[in-house]
Amino acid sequence: MFSSHKELLKSLDSTKLVGLVPTMGSLHNGHLSLIKKAVSENEQVVVTIYVNPTQFNDINDLKKYPRNLESDIHKLRNYKNIFIYSPTDKDLYQEVVSKNYDLDNLDKILEGKFRPGHFSGVATIVEKMFDIFNPDNAYFGEKDFQQLSIIKTMVKKLGIKVNVISCETIREADGLAMSSRNEHMTKGERLIAGKINKFLIKAKELYKNKKIDKIPVSMIDEINNLKNCKLEYFEIDNLSKYSSSLMDEGDRIFIACWVGKTRIIDNITLK
Image (cartoon, rainbow, N blue to C red; front, side, top):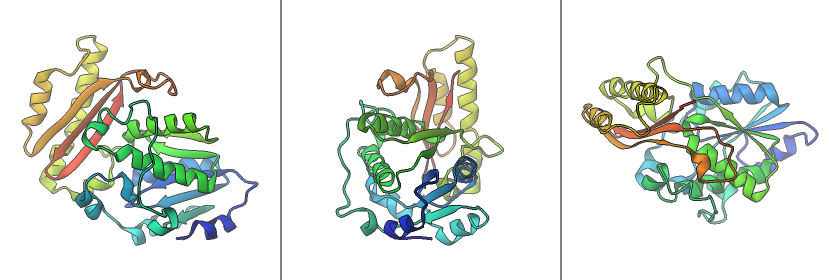
């Protein structure tokens, strides 16, 4: 494991393909699926484990974000040709602030409405990682589809030479998208959270049958009536309409809600 990017760079072979998997740690099977794909497609893989302060608009969220570095290292022990990078703030930032980016207003919708400044922080740290490691390929999960779209937009606008590779959302048996924050839920809250994906699937079926072009109020009320559940948004949108940097991947359904004190986001394609 490396805490200094300068030391890690000495161990990389510049003649070999480099894959990058940026994470904030507390690794689960969703992260591991990205790493497995990266390992299969590259000769060297850098896995970053760093809770980036600039992407948190709530200091309390930053403080309580799960950190399990020892467990993370243990989970990665059997992977070959990977380099674990777990830096300090000082290794990445002279001053812990976000840059300003032109993201075609993708940072103002959906998550951007509820987490001001979040995507500037994401873009800042991802650009830093790209600049440091100059990867050939970088891997991101579709659970954070808006984030993925913003990274693709940033790469296109800045002319960064990296293949941004989308990886499917990995789910629990009941359909809940895997997330490090899920561990904060009680057993009762976890049962409620397992119902979220069912609403996405129900809305998708209505959409495919041409019965809706936006989420019915009745379905929104149904979610809000779940115990300890508070909806923030549940919308059908096509992110490519905001940015010419994106390919048209069709409409998707996006949802964000609180179950107890845990915030859940998810999305599915409507193709």
